[in-house]
Length: 137
Figure 1: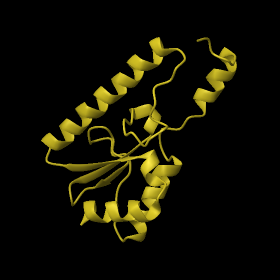
Figure 2: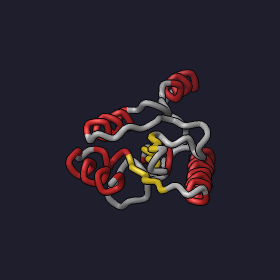
Figure 3: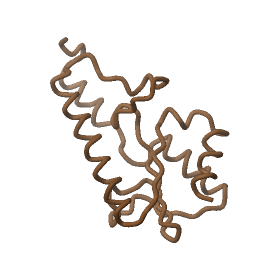
Figure 4: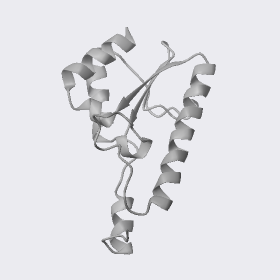
């Protein structure tokens, strides 16, 4: 299926997509801070540059966008594969998932525990706070 918008407009749309400091990530950071935990963000010395790193606890949190990281939960509508330009998107998203798995394996091998939070899981703050509390305890 051909793209419905021009190449220039598509390029502009893609340019505006952020990889750091996204709304779900900022929400998680705010909740964790309110819970009294202190963290470092986007540590380059850790595999995958976790969104939040708790150095003394050796714990990390990744906040993944459902589309970009291929969330496969039945309840997630944002993780669906795109129907247009599948030849481009399917391999790209598969590479993202492989890269995530490699980063997680490297973290685990280094003795770190990690939590992956999906964009769709940040919608309910109470459930999110409970999950964060369990992980960081």
